[in-house]
Image 1: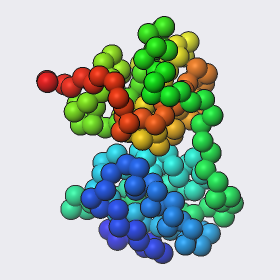
Image 2: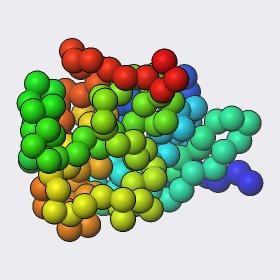
Image 3: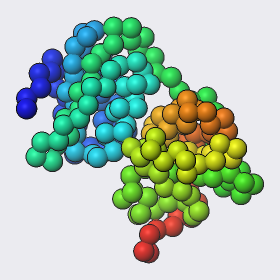
Image 4: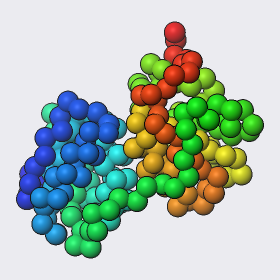
Length: 188
């Protein structure tokens, strides 16, 4: 089934946060009400682009997969302010281990493969795309430190948790790409 899009954006072969960065830039060239088709191969882009679209007020229409390529369809909102909300409560990489040792949980929202190849010991893995369906695994009374590779997905996840009534949520910045502490690997 061919879906008509007003513009296409090629994000094949790149990973988070670049599909979001390129989509944000491309949306500046799209007229209000028009549809942007984002072509991606990163499975994490499904949750990332959906959450980003909703966070800035665009309408995420859905995703179709064709021959290993994810085709995301986003309708530009006519009330786009161009400003992306950032989650206010943040914590640094350097602070997170100490804070978590006092009863908090480190929530890693990267994809399973990213987590398997290196994560903070004791962190809980719930990929961004599964977060909404797995909220019952988290305690609303516990501090939750959300981490991803660069702070983009964790920002979106922290906002989603806050919207769902979690009040003790922090986005960990700058994320695993800059992590200097020890890491654990699955089967290694």
